[in-house]
Image (cartoon, rainbow, N blue to C red):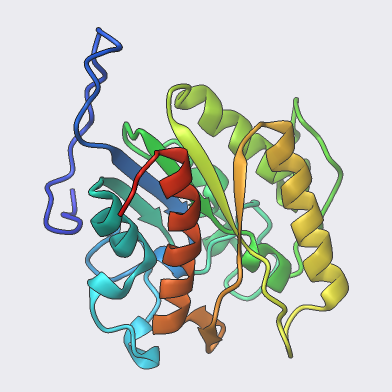
Length: 239
């Protein structure tokens, strides 16, 4: 297993006595290129984006490293795969390669965390995956090639597998000049808000500075800062 940060990743054992609160919180990430960094993904064969080209040259600049440092948490697993979609849709350049590395195909590999961050959806709209209908059970293979049923299936399964974990969905809501249309962006935001609300999962809306369509140094700090605003309130942390 790949080491992340300076802390060896390990499962956080839940205490039998609820008053015996663990002193260390472990978190896992299910994401795409926005959270990938060479040498800090698990499985280590996951594709990573070349962040050095936009000035992110050290792991300490990544949003999740900043969160871990501020909250004094430990990384359980960073299952981020560059280019991956939430859905199994794969009708674009690269074909089934990305389909078999979707969030749905990796959602069972998150370890045993206390907190789970899911950051994605951008690649689905960039690759023109259909939005599909709002479906909350009995998903078909065809439906799981569309965004809305796939997100519902993902959240349903993660909640069932990790009933004691606090789950956050991190959603980029920034306008995208020269990229997806404003109508598509608003459709994505409305879809994610509706589905996360259905599963009672907190959605953190992110306004991110980017370079080459990826969060640069400022963008990584944007993700960390906006995420920490929520975490500090939720976990009663004063830093």
